[in-house]
Structure formats: structure tokens, C-alpha cells
Image (tube, rainbow, N blue to C red; front, side, top):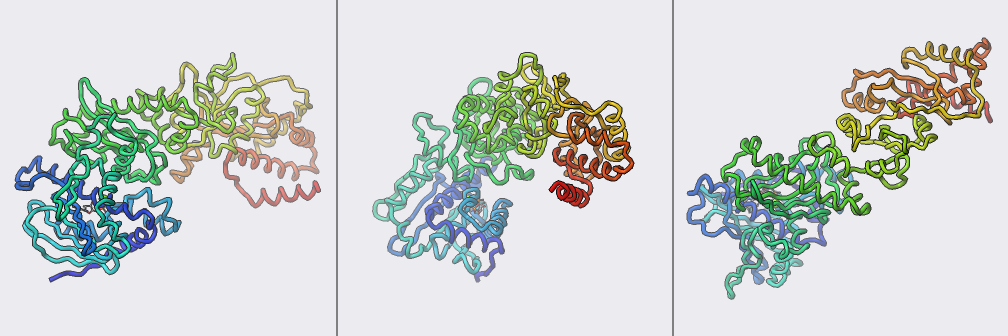
Length: 612
Ligand code: ADP
Ligand code: MG
């Protein structure tokens, strides 16, 4: 008796997308099915460590391809873990992985598969790109009953009991007429050698007359000599483990010897994954002990700020029966992690010399990498030296801290920065006017993490890192312009102080502004306005309130005029209105929201009309 079941709605959508949009790259189904077979062998190998009986009589783990050009079918079988009925229903009828359902959601929004598809493993369902029907016969290791699963990829699937003597899975594809070429042995050999050579189990071509022929090298790629591995093979391996379709930007393959021995093969992608900032996304490296697969996504092997690094670690110094809990406290794991981080930083340093090359990495991952300045105490100066920033002098390019130091003026003792939401807005912040006047370079920092690392790295190579509001520079310089008269300026200040008593803590005259009439800043040593805004956005509350200072420029014609009129009773209303506009402008320049935008808009329109 067979049971008929429907695919989960998302699977239907997924199938639709995969079948209809990957038309030019149909061959990837083979890589996906071989990859699943390899995973199934890994799982059985791992289970048999603790339960040797489970793989009794199993023979060598391998993957077999059986083409049949008469009947136009291709069968991919493995003697790995196999699936029981629940597995079939849960793994081949629903989408469990959050990434895949994100994919479907994303597709619905953007409607374009081309850019997105590369970021997801399309997995088992890619079989329906070439098959009009898929028939699976599988038996789970350690269980008695085998099952058959059949589907045309459109109307759900059917499951029934079946006969199979050995554990493992046979996937038979009834090829579409136009996909007959997947029974061609020359083509199959070519595909396996190109896309699946790195698989550590033998991939065997089963030819009725000529017998069995092993196509791939069948040894784990990382165990081979570096000199014998081509870039193409590294790339295929990278795509296999990362489920990415891009080229690796960095490939790092090394063997560490010494107090602990391990081999590692690591990659940095050349494009940014969509989920770099998804906090619940599991990251980390694959762990092998003596070429036996132990665990996927071992977060303990990679610090969070390097979460975009993909790859594997294989060590014979770890116990084979290492558990998840043990990984967390294992001193060897911590040592391997340190070793890996050191090697990665060393390689990044080499690539750092070439700006065009390095900035590709930086554009994709700099924003995560910078978290290391905050997170990785022992490497923070190194990470800072490998970081790039916008600045008032770097132009289109970004600058490093070392390049900044080289450009520093002889009497300058600090690296200055300002924080905000957007580089262009920041570059025009009135607070920078005095720095420009003095020729002092200022870093323009716009990532939330910048607010934090600047607190944990108080100095770099002996130079203090300072927010511009904390600069103790003498900003006075010779000025030829007219200045507001002392007495009336003071009256204006007192007036504004009273008018804005709920919004700013203090109103002050400043020598720092050149072209703007006003500017907003905070008391020295207090939380920056940008950080306060970030906190507010995240906590929905104004629990943070540093004392705002409204600085006014006594050389600005508008301020001069206001202070001249401050005692004119007839202009009382005007003065209030203009003062309010000025405070709003100071807020806008700082990226802060203004209190009453309708007031602002109508007041500005009124003055524009007057000026016409
Ligand atoms: P992924 O491999 O990324 O998990 P797939 O769509 O390729 O996604 O496969 C879905 C699931 O189906 C696998 O995780 C696995 O549990 C199961 N599966 C697929 N092929 C096999 C196989 N040959 N043997 C055992 N299980 C398999
Ligand atoms: Mg898969």
C-alpha cells in the first residue's frame, strides 16, 4: 500500500524556481546528489565509531553512478546512513533549513533567481531539473524496513514499503527526453572529475559491460599535497562545503605542526552572503578527526568576527568521540582556533599591500571583521592595522590607520574620528569645519560597531583615538570677519538657553565654526549623539541623554544680525522663529530628527518667499 503525500507549500515554490531558473546549469543536480551521498557516508562512518555493529557487512563506503541509456535513467546510489520513513517525509517533503525558506521568501520579493541561487544549496530538489520522475529506494542503517519514495516533483510524493538488503540510498532519475546526455559516460566522467573530484569516497561508474570504474581520486582534498591540487579543485571543494557558487577570494591550506597537529583548508568568499548579520545563523568550520567527519559548523573553531570564513579542520590529536559539549571546553580546540586566526591574519596582511585586491575583501566583510577590534583582545591592534576607513582626506579610497598616522601633522597627537549614519552627511558636519581649517584629518565612521571598537582601542601605535568632541586642540585662528558684539551676543545666548531649555543643556559661542551658523555637540566625555541614536533605535527608549551643546558661530552674519536685534521688541516673534530654525538645522546636520517638521517646513518656505 502506498501513501500519497503533498509537499510543503514552500517546497513547491522551491521546486518551481529551481526547475525553471537554473536551466543553463542543469548539471549541478549531479553535484548535489553526490554531495548528499557523501554526507550520508560521513554520517554512517561517524555513527560506527560508537556503534561498530551498525555498518557490519557494509563493505567500503562508496558512491555508484549507473547510467542506462536504453531506458534513459541515471541511478545514484550510496551505502551510507540511508533514510527511514520519517526521514523521507521530513527531509524530502519539507524545507527544514531556515536558509532555504529564506530563499523562497527572498525570491518572492525580488523575483530574480540569478543572484540569489548562488547563495543557497539547491540540494535534492535539483534532481527535478533533469528528471520527470524520481524514485528512491532506501534503508536506514540499523533498521529492518526499507522504503520507496516516488515523485514527479509536481503532485507531491508517494511512499511505500520496499525490499533492500543493504543500508543506503538508491536514487533513480527518469530523465527528461532532452536530458538524455546524462547517461553519456564520457560526459558523466567529465562532470565528476570537474565538480566532485574532492569527495573523499570513491565515485564509481557502473558500466554493464566494462564493469566498475572509479572516477575520482577518492581521497580527502586537504590530505593531498598542495602542489598537486589545482585552483579549480580548490574552488570546487570550496563550493561543495560552502554551498556558494562564487570563487574563493582567499584560499589558505596549511598543516600546523608542533604542540598540536592539524591540517586546515580555509576560504574567504568573494561575495557577501545575505545572512552575514543573521544572529541565529550557525557559522563555523567543519571538523574532522583523522579524516572522519565529526561535526558541521563548529563555532568554537572560529571567532565571531571571522564568521564568513568557510573551511575544514582535521586533527589527529583530538579524540574521535569528541562531543558537542566537549568542543566547548576543549583546550586543544581553543589552541587550533588561535592558530587558525593567526594564519588568517598573516595572509590578510600579505593581501593588504594591494589596495584594489584587498578592498574587495573589505567591501564584503570589513564590517564584520572590524568587530574583531572589539572582540579579540589579543589581536586587536593587528586587526585595527588591517582595517580601512573613510576619512576627510582619503578621497574616494579608504585609509588605514597607518596611512593616517603618516599624514599626521607634527604637533598632532591623536587620531580623530567622528561617527554618524552616512559618510556624505558626516563629511559636511559643521563640527569638522575647524579641523578642515587646521588641516587635521578626521576618520568618518558610519558602522554601528565603530562606536564600540573606538572605546576598546583607546590608542593605536601610541596615538590616542579620539572623538572630535574630545579634541583638546587650540582652534583659535586669526579671523578677519566681523564678529557679533560681546554684550548682545551674550544676551542672544541667554535667550536661546531659555528658549531651548528642554532640548539642549547649554548654548555656547565657539571659535570652531567657519561656514555654519550653529552646530550640535555633546559635553566632553559623554556618549556621542550617533551612539545615543543607535541605542534609541534599538531600545525604543531615550534612556540615554548626554548633555547637548548648541554651539553658535559669532562670525556668522545670521548670528550677528540676531544678536543686533535681540532687544528689538518688534522682532521678538521673528527671533524666536529663526532661533528654532537654527536649532533644527543643527539637528539635521547631525543626522538627528527634528521636533516639529511642519513648523520647520512652513517657516523655511516663508523665508524663502521673503527672499525672492
Ligand atoms: P542538504 O544536503 O543541504 O541538507 P538536500 O536538499 O541536499 O539538503 O538534502 C536534504 C536532506 O535529505 C539531507 O539533509 C539528508 O537528510 C537527506 N538526504 C538526501 N540525500 C540523502 C542520501 N543519499 N542519504 C541519506 N540522506 C539523504
Ligand atoms: Mg545536499
